[in-house]
Structures are given as structure tokens and as C-alpha cells.
Length: 141
Image (cartoon, rainbow, N blue to C red):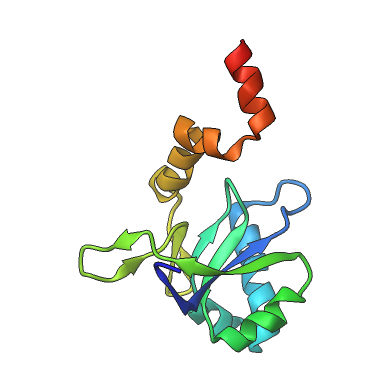
């Protein structure tokens, strides 16, 4: 898969109950990964991005064999190979979501979800993902 190195993983979580604050969601991500890695400190070092608004997930650098442990943890929906979106200004790979640097999530900015929002609002993308029956109904109207 283009952009996947099988060292960067996206852990998609079930939506949280109620309306937790952003820092509470992020702390739950840290606690979840800590169950697989053995400590919150190791989890914080491993996480490189989080998503807390449009979908609930975090990106982490871990060996592929650890993904099997994470898949069985509570509230984990999927563990998928993460792929970079584009090369950064210094040649490094940039991944989606809100950057998580030195154990802290950066202040929220809508730009971190610009690609995701673009795909959700892109008519071409929606036409590809809607069923054939829905597209036929649209043509009749």
C-alpha cells in the first residue's frame, strides 16, 4: 500500500460515551496504548497524532506484532496501517490528525482535518461511495 511502512498504525476507537473534553479523549488513547506497551510514558512516546473531533483515533509508531494485542483491547474498533498524506517541508512524512508532540497534543486547528473534510464534501468522492440505487434515484430527480 502506498505510503504505508507497517511501523505507523492508526488505532480507530469507538466513540466515547457522553461528551468528554478533548484532553480526556486523548488521555483515554494514552491509557489504551499503555495497556499494550506497559506504561503511559511509552505510549506517549509512541503516539504521533490524535483525532478527537470528526472521528476517534490515534496514530502510533509500534512494531506490527503489537497491533494484535491492541486489536483485543476495550473500545478499539480497528488497527490499520497508517499512510502518510504528503511529504513535509523537511522531507519527513506527514500523517493526518492533530499532531501529538513530546507527549502533548498541539492546540486544535481545523487545518489538521482539511483533507478529511475535503473528502467528506467532495461530490466526486460521494458519488463513488453512494450505492448505485441512490445514484439512480438522484438522476431521476
